Length: 493
Ligand code: AHR
Image 1 (cartoon, rainbow, N blue to C red):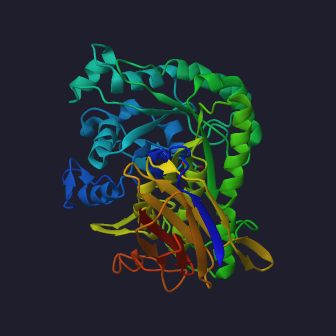
Image 2 (image 1 turned 180 degrees about the vertical axis):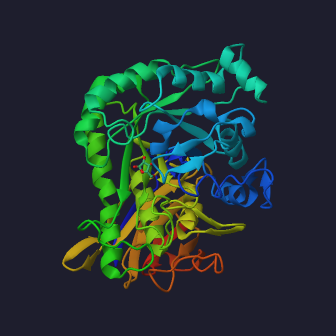
Image 3 (image 1 turned 90 degrees about the vertical axis):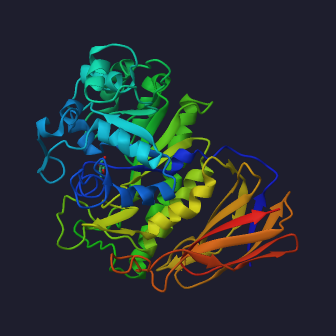
C-alpha cells in the first residue's frame, strides 16, 4: 500500500482560479473556424461566435483567456481589428503559415467572447513591432470612461461603456519571435512600455512581463533585478515535447510505451522549472508579490497528417489528459507563486480543449480533466505528503502517483490524483488529519488504451465515469486508482 497524508486541518495558499486559464491565438483554426464563424454562418452563433464552443468552455468555467498571441501578438496592430468589418484591412499572418488575416475577429469580438464564456480577458500587447503609443492607445480605447480620442472611437464603434481589462502582457517571447532581445534590453523596453499601460477610472491592470523560455534562469534573474517593481507577473513558457534527435516522429496518437513514458517524464520537468524560477524570484521578491504566470504550456507533437504544418493541429489522447492532470497538480502545489497558467491553445491548436470540424465539435480528454479539476478554483491548498511507488520504464523512473488536495469555501475536501503507470493499479492508504470523512464520491478518466481519443464520430470515447475505488476506512480512505487514470474525489465530513 502506498501512503498519502492530507493535512486537512491546515490551510495553505489560495489556489488562484486563474491557474485554470487558457490561451487563444490567431493561429491555424483556433480563432477562425474554431471560435469565430461570422454572423452569416449556418453554424449557430451569437454575434459571429460559435454557440457550441462557448457552451463547452462555459461548462469548464474558464476563468481567464489570453489573446491574440503568442508570436502573433508582436505582429498585431490592434487598430486594424476595429470598426466595420468590411472596411478592416487585411494582413499576412507571417508567423503562422502566411495566411491572410482579415481582422474580422478583433478587440470588440474578443471582449464579447470573454463576456459570453465568463472569462477575464488577458490581452498581450505588441512590443516587437509595435510602438509605445499604440500600446498606450489600446489600453485607453478599452478602459477609459470619459472623453478622449480613443474612448470616442470606441463609442463610435458601438461600445459605450469601457471594458474591465484585468490582465495585460507587455510583449510575448521577446527573447525569440517577439524581437530576439537580450534580457537587459527587454527589461528596459518593458519598463518604458509598461509606464504607459495606464489605470483609467477604476480599472487596475495586472501587468505581466515577458518571462523566460523553459530553463533560461538568466532571463528571470535579469528581469527580476531590473524590473520587478514595475510588474505584477512574470511569464514562463514550457512545452512538453518528445525530445530526441531533430526529425524524430512525434505522433499525437500513434505511440508506444516508450513515448508515453517520455512525454510524462518530460512534462514533470515543470516541477523543476517552477521551483528554480521561483527560487530566483524569491531572491528579488521575498514577499512573493510578483506572480509566476505560466502563460503557455502543454504538449506539442507533429501535426495531424495532411494538415498545414504551421497550423499546429494535433489530436489529444489519454496521455494528454495525464499531462494536464500532472501539471495542474504542480501549479496547485506552487500556488503561492504560480497565480496564473494558460494552456495552449483552447480550440484546434496544440493541446486543445475542443476540436471542430465544420459544424461538428468534440471535446478532448484534456477538456475532461479541466472539468474534473475546476473544484480547485479559488480553494485553499492543503499540504499533503505522498509515499508513492515508482513507474519504471527502460531503466528510468518517475513517481507513479501525483496528488493535489484543496478545501473549498463550503468545507468540502477535493482530491485529484493521477496514476501514470499504464499497467499497474495504485493502492493508497490515505490519512486525513483533522477531518472525519462521512462520504466520498468521485469520477475517473481512463480508457482501454493509452492512445484512446475522441473523434467527431465518437466524441465520448474518452470521458469521465463514476469512481467507486475510494472507501472510508479507519477514519481515513483507501483508494485504488486504475492504471493510466485521472481521478477526482469529493470528501464530505
Ligand atoms: O503556442 C504556439 C506558439 O508557441 C506561440 O505563438 C509562441 O508564443 C510559442 O512559441
